[in-house]
Image (tube, rainbow, N blue to C red; front, top):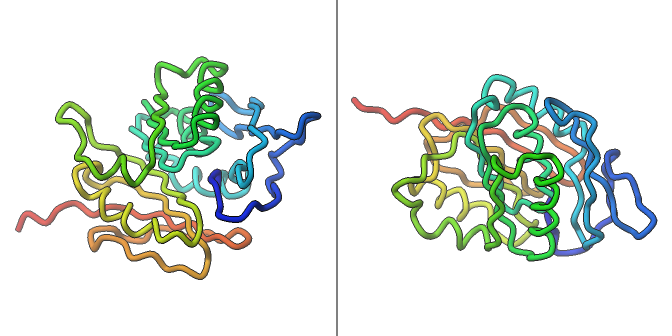
Length: 212
């Protein structure tokens, strides 16, 4: 819910405090950077994930976030990846194709003093996942996937994550329009589900490979 939708919609997060020049602010709600306010660009469809959803999600992930390697796809404001870093994630990669939005996210990492733990990659998320990860890239243990609505991006991204990007027993959070039930790999087990407005977030746990 930090991402771009095909049609601009009003900001609806309680953490989106309006600024004089039309931008907003992202408030981190837990961990090391709790209560820190970060600027958000005034860009159509760009808004932080609501506090309630983030709090619920990270309560579910309380034991999985510390030490996690995080991949935040379609990162937008980076609210989920930044929240993970605040709560003890080891590192996070943010994938965002809009140059201005990516630059703003990088600036926010600098503001938090977290630039060494967070890498912003300016790229299309689906294209990024097309190539296999480099041999030296450890797999990700926690992934946030929140593509633009109604562009049929969730399923191909889920499929491509299975091409070497995921650690065994990784957690994957997928957010889509509520009318869509995304097709996910058979090794993913639904762990929790939350609905907010016109979107539904589903947290999956990747099952370990069966060696039998």
